[in-house]
Image 1 (cartoon, rainbow, N blue to C red):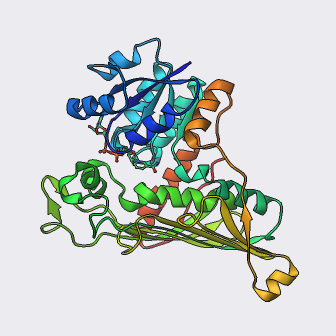
Image 2 (spheres, rainbow, N blue to C red):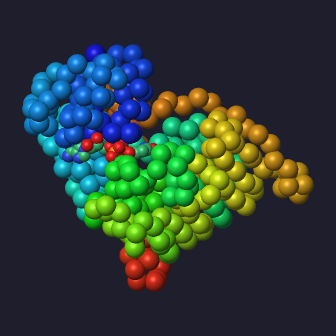
Image 3 (cartoon, rainbow, N blue to C red):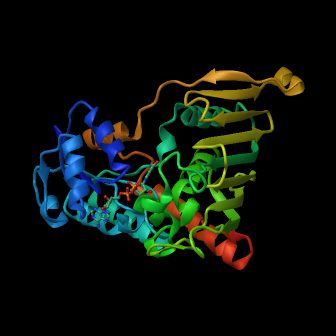
Length: 352
Ligand SMILES: NC(=O)c1ccc[n+]([C@@H]2O[C@H](COP(=O)([O-])OP(=O)(O)OC[C@H]3O[C@@H](n4cnc5c(N)ncnc54)[C@H](O)[C@@H]3O)[C@@H](O)[C@H]2O)c1
């Protein structure tokens, strides 16, 4: 039995508890949160019997094998490193850290520990993403030339997910002082991974980031709402392709629309996750290219991230969504912020 503890019992922790709870051979063993009210409600909801007064106490429990770090972004580093040093496997929420240096340190501690470490790049689990990677590797669309990726949300201007005005979970996402890298650090992480995982490494980035007027003169309660909420990135890939990656919280009419189109010398792949997680559109072959015809391709099932993390613990084989990958993405985020501030293209030195 693998005993898992949840650190941070807010919104996203519910998904961790539900998904971990469904895996055979896993016990939802304990939880910890600084907010005791949230902790109690969460434990009651997910039938978790064991809680601790401090994180130190929790990590000192020899029966605990692994933690899910579901705290806000600015606590990811400290808690994950502490857990790794205490000998626990760590499944950390995204973005891995607040900046590349911190993320790199996490990746180094994880490597030294020899423990399983994973960052929750949610869309890796989508069967179509794995299928797209395989199709590209097999040469089905030739050499990739152009990529167009977008992640659209609209919670800044509607209350379908609850209003942001009275929910700290939305408010900290809007405030740089609370460790947020805005939409770029929130869902931009996913779309950067989604665009580059099947295509290859990103070599340069030119970014435009902005936040729009909100609250009362840009403030609400103790939060200054200054984190970016629209991000436009133009990127060049190592293999010569170029692409656009965009994310926003102002896409009226879109709750959570994730799309990636990849065009190559011999064909194209189009994915719209809001329509299907396991079916993509493919244009490939001489006839299809001349007639611009597309066909649906069904992708085989793939394991969700929670199962992949547990499988890693069971087999000792590290998943590719590891802290090193989390750090790589963090580097792209840092470069985007630098590019936006300096109004120029920024080159990333590629890590292997
Ligand atoms: N992978 C995804 O698709 C996805 C989706 C949503 C959220 N997330 C990530 O999950 C994380 C949590 O987001 P959320 O929406 O659940 O936030 P939230 O604000 O709802 O919950 C965070 C919880 O952590 C607790 N907390 C804060 N500091 C703590 C500390 N030092 N020790 C223990 N507990 C602490 C808070 O009291 C709160 O209960 C974020 O990093 C977010 O980016 C990922």
